[in-house]
Image 1 (tube, helix red, strand yellow):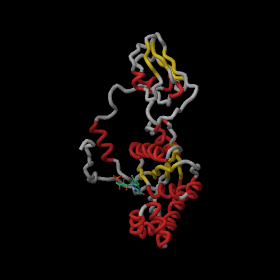
Image 2 (cartoon, helix red, strand yellow):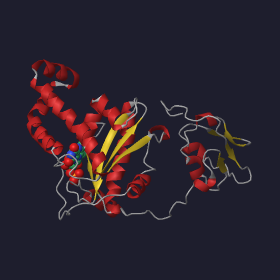
Image 3 (cartoon, helix red, strand yellow):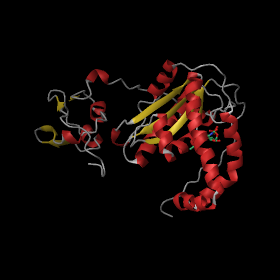
Image 4 (cartoon, protein in one colour):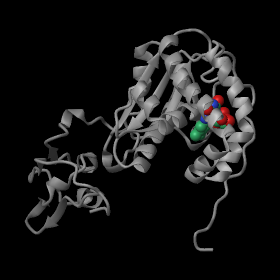
Amino acid sequence: MVPGMSVARENVSITADPALCVRCGDCVATCPAEVFSLADDGLRTDNPGRCIGCGHCVAVCPTGALAHSDLPADRFEPVSEEPAFTLDQVRRLLRERRTCRRFTAEAVGPDEIGALIAATSHAPTSTNSQNVRFLVFHGSEQVTKLARLTCGYYLKLRRQLENPFMRLALGAAVGFKTVAAYRMRMPAIAAAFERTLAGDDRLFYGAPAVVVLYAAGLPHLALANGNLAAAELLLAAPAAGLGACYNGFAVTALVRDKRARREAGIPDGCTPAAAVALGHPAGRFFRVPPRNRRRIIDAGM
Ligand SMILES: Cc1cc2nc3c(=O)[nH]c(=O)nc-3n(C[C@H](O)[C@H](O)[C@H](O)COP(=O)(O)O)c2cc1C
């Protein structure tokens, strides 16, 4: 059992067809929850209650001997023999992805967004919880609602930063460096958000849709699950002809402001993890901008 892995399922039944099982042990080795063991008389499913439903046992079985009660055989898809992309193609995909900050007014339909979100279904989640929810703000009315909640939070923060007692309280809560950084950036942020509230969208850049990803469970894992899915949205969007912009302001407002969270429709107990604005890009990039070299630290040094 992987440390910290919770028991996720009850009444699961995983059976091995003795006529097909070649006792290779691949399912035993692959299962993260130690459901299986190999005995002299064949494969045993000792602990089906520990199963996290990842399906790796069925997916790895070379002879198709395993049947999982929660994951019917017809829901497994074949795996391509060749890798879908060469490393160079993947590098290109990763390097040429850009944050889009100019959107046309063209609407993005619910089906387009649904297809993009569906493409992220295989993003990893802690304990295979698959607990990420995608709250979609469609069209200018709904996007404006999210913009108002976000800008409202920041304009309130500006007022709080003007008050020395509030500054002390905020500093104690989030760190004095963060407060100092916000004070420095606040005039520009406030100006942009006042423009946004007046109808010139400097927050989502006129994007016709915003997806807020949230998840239940331990906040640090909810953040990880949501952001892994968000990263896949960012990478997949251009293939659907869409531009995408991660929005940290909206996430910050939703994390810090319970009322905004509720008004946005995020259930209590869930952690807002990411917000991604989506739309048709107005214009394109002609160059890949430079980035710092990755710093690799040898853990043994
Ligand atoms: C956590 C996080 C928050 C971000 N917040 C914003 C944001 O509020 N507005 C924005 O325009 N871009 C935002 N971005 C996008 C970054 O500014 C962008 O990734 C960076 O400028 C590099 O550009 P690139 O993504 O095209 O490489 C955010 C990115 C991350 C990862």
